[in-house]
Image 1 (cartoon, one colour):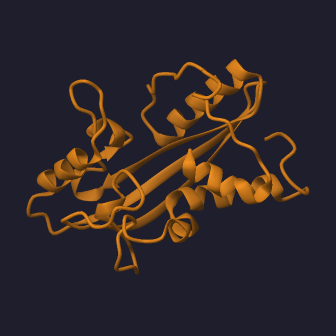
Image 2 (cartoon, rainbow, N blue to C red):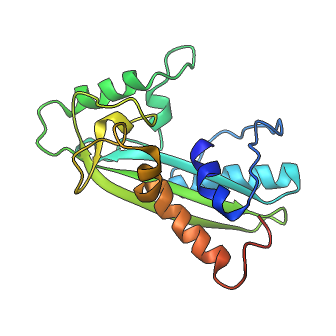
Length: 190
């Protein structure tokens, strides 16, 4: 939510989370980022009567067959459902073992849904490599073990404004904003 608010703030769009509206959170039952993003956005738009923008993001580690993928947050959960991303990063490291292929990509699918049930998905990715040990205390999730291609610092080490400019979420937002602002002074339904 922090990143979404930061990316939308320059456009004067006020964001309110589903949690702040006390909307029920649908179970993510789809098998893709786009499917889960659409499921969440349509549920929020239907329940609130307002346009809804949802995000489904994760990290695909190539040598792990794309895992954790859409299950990135679940990899961080313990038996009680509490999230500990150090635990998830350690699992990635452990499962990669001695693999020479350290390539990974962050993926973000944004979905804009309207109360009438229509929706559009915008996807963005950023390619890089997994490093160990984790570095940096900025960002969240898997940021401390991901170095974007062409960079030397992890997403956990760089300034968050810099991350907002080149992350998977930024790539998806660029597509979303280009579509929404292409023919007018701004989105007429966000």
